[in-house]
Length: 265
Image 1: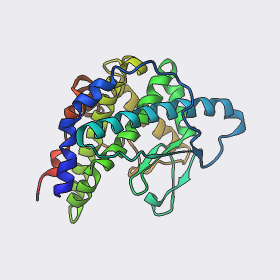
Image 2: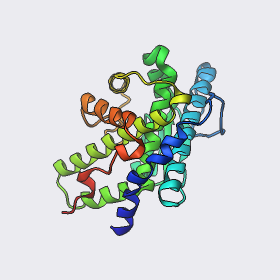
Image 3: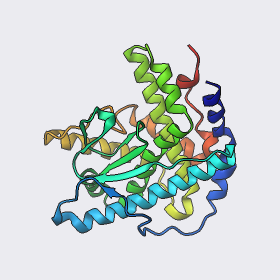
Image 4: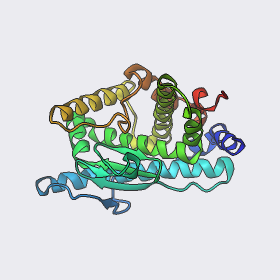
């Protein structure tokens, strides 16, 4: 636990790194890397899918850059970036025991963020004029889970869950989700000159839109597993509050490791 504790202290040290990154230059929606597609998007939606991929890739890469510099400035350790893959409707992942998963998800076992182009297209339609902002925040939110992995927070949570009852496991999972929301807010603030301002209630609206998109898919017999559903836990109000803390705070220091995770039994 000493190693984990040392990594968790990064959250207090990295505020300067994030504040410096907020001064970086303009951000364009150009493709940063080709990514890896697990299943091609339907031909009729080719151009649309390509645009969504570009926007997601750029935001994901930007968040990875913010985390990497924050980790380096806080501890001098190397941040290992997450892998990024795209698929349409479902993808097989070791995190589901070799089963298929739909919707954007993060697999800590492999350090991979997977983005369902069909689900992102549904979200983009719901977000309409704020499509670019919403897709960027979704990408950063999955990247925040990888940051938790790199800091040892997910390992600490796994230790806390050993032998724990259902209620305690749910409590730890919710705390992790809210911290990841907060970290996403911290990224949005650091990337403000590239991303633009985030309206005060937008994160809560994004959560609401996501949950409605999940309900729509369920009505089509395409269910997202709660285990991999980014916004399955915690209330819309709590999630907006967590994001706002990160957005208004001083970098990662605004998003400390959850007490439910680091507290000793």
